[in-house]
Length: 404
Image (cartoon, one colour):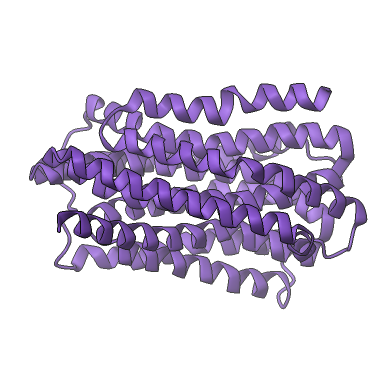
C-alpha cells in the first residue's frame, strides 16, 4: 500500500515538474525560434554567444533555491518548521545579494563580456543587448527560481507548474509581438524573456496566502554555516547549469574557428534543443527531490530507494524516445530554425544532432543520481558527479577531438 502511495506521489510531483521545466526551458527555445525567423543566422549566432550568461544566472538561482529548499524539506520532515523558516529567510537574502552582483555586471561590464565571448562586428550589438538585459533582470530570474523550489517543497507542485507554464506562454506570445508587429529585434526577444519570470513570481505569491503555506520570513541573523550548507547542496544544480554555459562557450570558440558564424548558429540549434531535453531530466530529478528529502528526514530509506528506481525507469524511457526522434526527424527539427535555408547550417546541425544525443541516457542518469545524493545531504558525491560530467571531462575532450 505504501509503495503505491509513493508511486502516485512520484508521478504527481515528477509529471508536474517535468511540464514546468519544459516550459521554463522554452524561454530560450522560443527566443531561438523567433530570432531565427526575424533576425536570421546572425541573430542565432548572437543568441548562442549570449546564452551562457543566462545559464550562469539561472544556475545561481537554482543553487540557492535547490540547496535551501532541500534543507527546508528535511527540516519539515523532522517537523522543525522554525529551522525551515530560517533556511527560507537566509536563502532569500543570499539570492538578493547574488542578483545584485549580476545587476552591477550588466550595468558596467556587459560590453567587455561580449568581447570575451568572441562576438565579431556583425553580431556584437545584438549579443551585447541580450547579455546586458538578462543581467539587469537577474533579480527576477533568481527570485523566481528560489520561490519555485520552495513552493514545490512546501507541498504545492501544481502551483509551481502553473507558474512556470504561465511564464513560458507569456514569453512565447511576447516574443512574437515584440519581434514582428513591434519590430523590436533582439531587445524585443530578450525583454519578452525577462518579463516571463515576473509573471511567474506573481502566480507563486498565491502560495503565501494558501492554507498549505509553511513559508514565512522570520527574524534570523545571516548564519554563515547555514548558508554554506545550503550552497553545498545547491552546487550540483549550479554546476549543471554553469557547465552548460561553459561548454557552449568552449564549443562556440572552437566552432567559430572551424566554421564561423554559420557554425555557431548550427551549434546553437543543437544546444538549445539539448536544454529542453535536459530540462526533462531535471524535472524528473527535482520532482523526486521533495519526496526523497521528506523520506530522508523521516528515516525512510526503503522508500527513498523505491523513488530512485521510479526516477531511473522514467529517465530511461524518455532517453529512448528522445533519441529515436532525433535519429528519425533531425532534418525537419533543424528546418524549424533554419529560416534562410542555409545548406551549411543544415548539414552541420543535422549531423550534430544525431551524434550529440547519443549521450542522453548518460546525462539523465548523472542528473538524477546527483539530485539523489543532494536530497540526503551528501553534498560531496553530488558535487563530484556534476563537476566530472559537466566540466572535467567534456572541455578537454572537446579541445582534443576538435584538434584531431
